[in-house]
Image 1 (cartoon, rainbow, N blue to C red):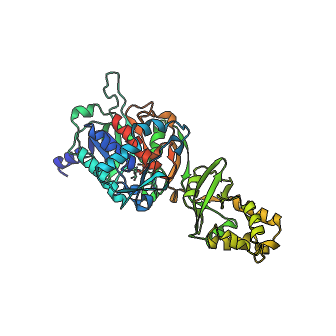
Image 2: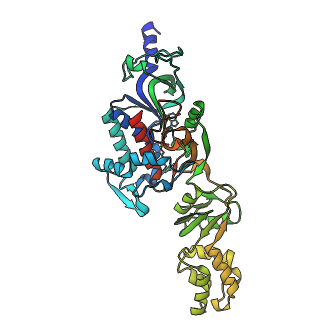
Length: 441
Ligand SMILES: Cc1cc2nc3c(=O)[nH]c(=O)nc-3n(C[C@H](O)[C@H](O)[C@H](O)COP(=O)(O)OP(=O)(O)OC[C@H]3O[C@@H](n4cnc5c(N)ncnc54)[C@H](O)[C@@H]3O)c2cc1C
């Protein structure tokens, strides 16, 4: 290698930007163009071969991008109030307005959930356009390894001499900007080690859910390296698995959906439940999974609109010749009644109601309204839509998303201990927290 080539290589291994965003997902992209619109030079470093993979796969390919009814009670966090500031600084109406300005076609589904009418690709294209218009540099196949802060003396001069500042063809900032650099981000880009120096770092590397879509623990390690505490993490919005007799029932009913009330402790969700070959899924189950801890019992009301005990006794007096299965199929899918009959009332399956004693009918009714289940586990991060827990909000400013003890270091999106319910809440948290970091970084 000639001296000139060597010099060029050394230079391109360092780049200087005002803001380096780690992770090109929903939160990172939003923060990036928001900061760039303020005139900040911004680079997004994304490990995958393309940005926004989760956006593309979300909502069955249509991305449930927000919800009309965003409230703090739709979020779980050790500090229930933390999310309020960001959600009010950038609301669902702001995001809807942005989408409308770009002509995105969308539809409202039940519970105020907004989905792209055609494809999540349309929404990602808007974020990419905003980034391009604002002049954001995007680097893919760039795996962030660590972030170091420069120690500065009282005059603001760098004390640590580990890293010299270099401007490179990549850099959007001048040497004088480099002198303001507080952080050095080390990554492996296309198999070559590279350092990005910057004034602000926004950590938006997401969480552990679905490793094939970018799930990563990098953000937690970076937080710990800077001394920020973590709240215990677990899989959220995730299906349940069973190892007892429930498994065979679920297997036999795989694909069958029923409207239920799912309860865990004092939390209840009224939604659809889906039987799968592994256990239970569907919106009611995903929602309640956020509140379930290993070993706990889950209660399912299969007939939430009825007092099933009274209903069966009433049917006995009004239609004594009917069988239990006929009166239940008026309210439940036939396949479910057939499978439950084999397990719950085989001894009087073929008898008319008149010949079933009241106590047995009452006991069956009670079970239908109060079916107790003990999941063996959740399906875990492989299929979980979100990760509960994360970087403790006590270490971050809710107004700016900046780490309290580290000026210029921001955490946003799912890496933070804020998790939304199913229904567009998690993306709204990504947009809102991304916006807040973008206007401050
Ligand atoms: C299948 C599925 C469907 C979902 N559907 C919905 C929905 O319809 N509505 C909703 O509100 N929420 C939905 N969610 C949740 C939502 O996708 C997340 O809450 C949201 O994407 C979080 O945004 P984020 O930017 O914090 O993280 P992510 O979107 O996960 O982005 C993080 C990015 O960081 C990158 N990264 C990780 N480590 C590194 C590293 N070391 N170096 C560089 N880059 C790195 C990742 O590759 C990724 O691109 C869904 C989730 C899944 C898994």
